[in-house]
Image (tube, rainbow, N blue to C red; front, side, top):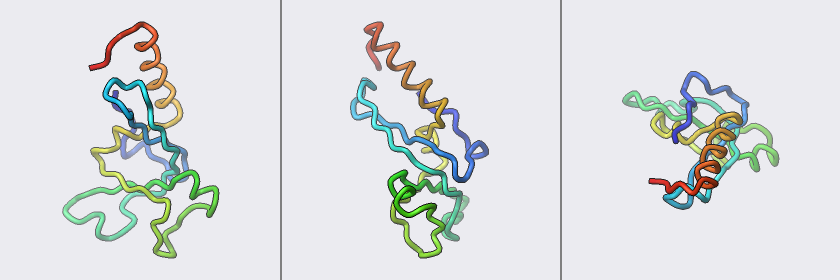
Length: 112
């Protein structure tokens, strides 16, 4: 399933989750907690209409606070493209996605 996160729904400073799976049958989720930092934080991000959305890892956020990029450091930062927003979930979306997959597993359904 894809998330319903859109460019316009992202809020700077809000917690999001990058959700992937270690297996094709979607039984082993890989969840990374991220804080949204902003869009096109560098001039080169907007070249040729490309959009980059920056997220800071929760570990980096707790350790160092919000990365304002004033130091020029990208430590703890992940950039995703507009197409990759399908992997970004808010709290509600993450819970819905995991619950849907758990229900399918509990019913013995095979994932394609």
